[in-house]
Length: 261
Image (cartoon, rainbow, N blue to C red; front, top):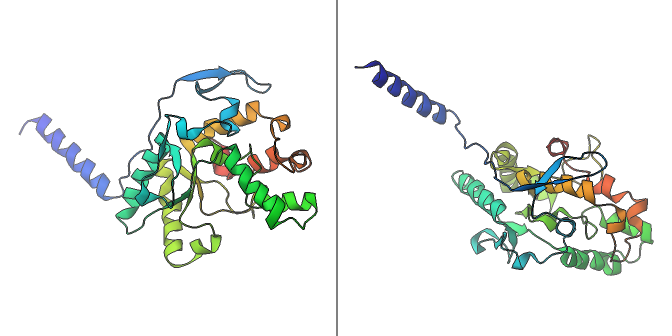
């Protein structure tokens, strides 16, 4: 047998041996046309050309944006939109999970400014209306964002399977959560609001909220480069954004692992 045939056999054997010992797909790299955006800290930040301040503030109609698509009914609890790249990665992740008898249902995806305002207004004018205004804002901010500060505006973030932390601490929910912790990063997904025991600020822990980091990391950087308190308005209680330091404490109060990206 020639030396080339022997080498070829060795390569094939090594490949299959590697896969049987935990071979996983490498995270996808996304090709994005970029443009430079200047700010006081960095003068050469690169962002997708389509990205603008209205996008990160949720002030656009994602249902008429060709970059967004509807999540299939079998993977969602209602009509939900995500960016196409995000949905593709989610479906790949779900297919992998199904092989271990685990499945994921998206409960919430993209929400624009108006949608987030409806959530905020309900809690401000009804659910927590008996609290003094500042305490009311703090109470809402335990789990809900001020309009124009939500990551759900971007089409990269989703709520999965349950909206209660207790669901993910036992039985089926615990199995699902452990799978996500071990495997989701392979497909680009990370939990946004982790435990606050190590000093994370802002929203309470949300075991259900996951982000597609290859895109959301870019949007997060753009948000911090271009948005300030004057952009956060148009709803009751917006004036407390300054006192509560909403951008630094809440928008930036995320999983330390994803802050590094």
